[in-house]
Image 1 (cartoon, helix red, strand yellow):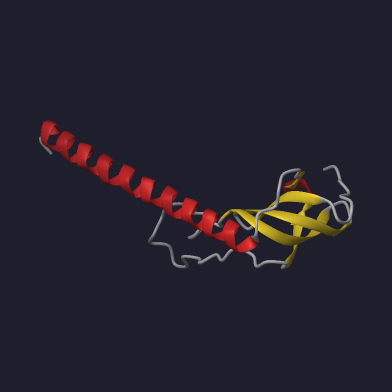
Image 2 (cartoon, helix red, strand yellow):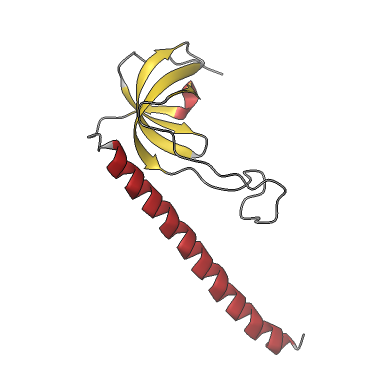
Length: 127
């Protein structure tokens, strides 16, 4: 697996624990990179990653977004250069949080509509 060194101070998009962030590189050893969080692009997913969409797992994980200026080690392969503007952390957290809630609400509505259609099929199948 190739190693990539990222320059200290470089702005990057980093994926970390199911979330995605705008961050600044602090240091890199090629294999992994220490970044400082500046903004949230995608809020981390909740639940068990090995059993997605299963609410009945033994440990349903709560995942908070990384905090402003929190330093985290990220595999260098999970980092891409970032060139855009960096929104204020609080604003970016609110936007990412709202997007995650909307995504889950849409999934919930999809599941409810699917169940309605399946109930109609059950009657048609005479089950």
